[in-house]
Amino acid sequence: MKVDVLLGLQWGDEGKGKIVDVLTPDYEIVARFQGGPNAGHTLEFEGKKYVLRSVPSGIFQGNKLNVIGNGVVLDPALFKGEIEALEKSGHDLKSRLYISKKAHLMLPTHRLLDACYEASKGDSKIGTTGKGIGPTYTDKVSRNGLRVGDILHNFEEKYNAAKAKHLRILNQYNYDTNALADIEKEWFEGVKKLKEFTFIDSEHFINNATKSGKKILAEGAQGTMLDIDFGSYPFVTSSNTITAGASTGLGVAPRNIGEVYGIFKAYCTRVGSGPFPTELHDATGDKLREFGFEFGSVTGRPRRCGWIDLVALRYAIMIDGVSQLIMMKSDVLDTFETIKACVAYEVNGERVTEFPFEIDDSIKPIYQEMKGWKTDMTKMQKEDQFPKEFSDYVAFLEKELGVPIRIVSLGPDRAQTIIRK
Image (cartoon, rainbow, N blue to C red; front, side, top):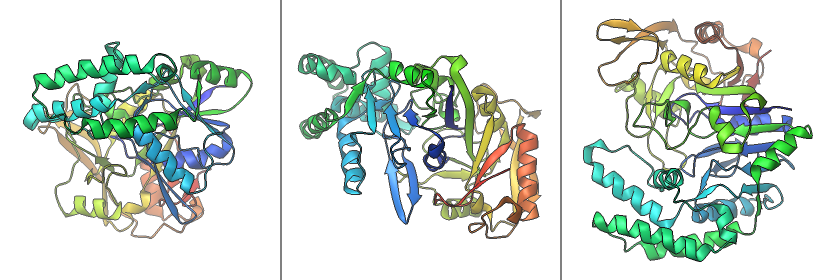
């Protein structure tokens, strides 16, 4: 049995949480393989809305097992808040959520370092969420990190040594650390909560599960264009958000990867700083933001909006080896007279269809225009109810991208999902 992977193909916020929830009935285990609590996966069903930060999005489906993999970075304080909110809603988590011993811990000082580094960049800020994710991955790579399994072995000694290193750095920047005591108090309460859950050697767990025939869905966070290696560097996240991240973030051999579900919006958004070739600074961009309710599910930050970018999307599909596409928020375009899609870039006066080494404000998108469908699709139940103009848009995208669009989402609710023939 192979591990299927589900991930975002744009700059994150594509709607992965909803689709994991929709697909989970076909799987026995859902495993998150990278990222931290800056990645909010929003799910809506039965009139209720949930925002997950670290917990995999399969947690609401019956008795499915959910795994936080070794590639994830975990903040005990934020984890505690997330767990308690879910428990209040009546969901039993302790028997259905396992945590990798090799997942790295975000420390209170990581949060201060994140804010310190951002402040030091001035106008060159990356636009991080300030939760300490970048510094946590930095410590992981520099071999100075603490892992979940360390909680069980000389933890206080290891924690104090890491804290002392961070304080020396903060002192060099003359950064105010007065908030540390309060952050630490919440953090250690979170560690107590964390210890109520089962810690596992997730690489053995996942591989033994596949050998025994269990179906596993690997859930990614953020999006391909935020990948640390292949995204719009340096305005990226700190982990590998691509399919290969499932191998390193769960311990799955490449030959054991099965279907790759790539999720994208019918348009495009981005949060924070960084280049965005199709961004719209006009009424159309405002309309996309308003109709799509484009605000961060964790941070509340307004998202930058623009038309779909097929240059970036083709690049993401190539890097990820996508076998099936899932298009989200199609209904947001319901009222537009004209729909545009960027099919190429103009770079130094030349038409370019391959994603370049670096993108900046000098790149001009080349658009193809299509007629809008001007139809409310939110209550449609079958593909044959689609207006012709929307079906034409889907066919155009499939031709441009070379991969079939299997699922079309027509709203935030679990029920507003069309699985195509």
